[in-house]
Image (cartoon, rainbow, N blue to C red):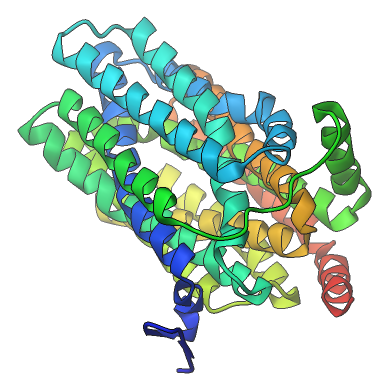
Length: 417
């Protein structure tokens, strides 16, 4: 395997972005922060289901945690492009740590109620509307070469999915040994790692946009709407996350009611999905944002649909875990691949807005899908809900296959230009 030489270390080509000092700092801090975030996410979903036993409330909580990405995210991207991204990311990370500590305190004092849980989820969702595009749009400034940006994005996604693989089983263990309050406190402490790393980063800040927030937003929206490839990729994000990603809301139901398990079972289901997602990002780390990546994106949607169908009909926990591996692989292959394509093609001055459109579709429709799945599951049951969503996604796969060649040719033309 070819290797990249930095002034300090030699890195494999699949990890070439780590040759950049600033990205290494970010990568290290982000690794700790993501692990804490996954521990909190699993603990929060288990807390809600333990307190209420309601699939609908699981959907409401997930909705409140993600819907700000859809409503606030696009305008947040325009605002981000006008300001110092690093400074504001440190500020947002500090507020997210405070949110985790407040949640831990409420649980420890036994003052937690479903109303507090929903409010805390909504608060975190609003903060994530700024945090996600801030982090994603800063990655390009952490690598000196634009050619290394796709690899940096893939490695960043690999961190997220490695955390998804390790964090949920660890959360299940912690929940068995301690409490939800301890999980939330650990997450609060984990934000300090990324804050410290960002303070150590040095270099030229990304260019800032000029004009009012409205003008900056309109400029980004015009670019996204008039570029057919961007429109199709955003549509794919919406279809995938409205259906396949809704599995997350119903996992506690499957863990306790379908597979007769507990928090440890929930952790293993999350971990299996994370294992598949991690494998997808390892695969993407060796790829460039070219036409072949478009085929991988389409394949990811198809794999997600088939895995969702398998998971929804099986009564076997081992087969369900295999289905979760496939689901994680397919969803991550599509979501991360689209992010790589969009950021590689976007002008640097528009990157914050393009990332905000990506996160809006990625997480906003994840929120809508989770809310819908939670309420539909009350009537149809968790199994039939995911079965219906798998069938709908399979229909979209056939639609996407009719447009794959045009997507590939336009991406190839953009790369040649």
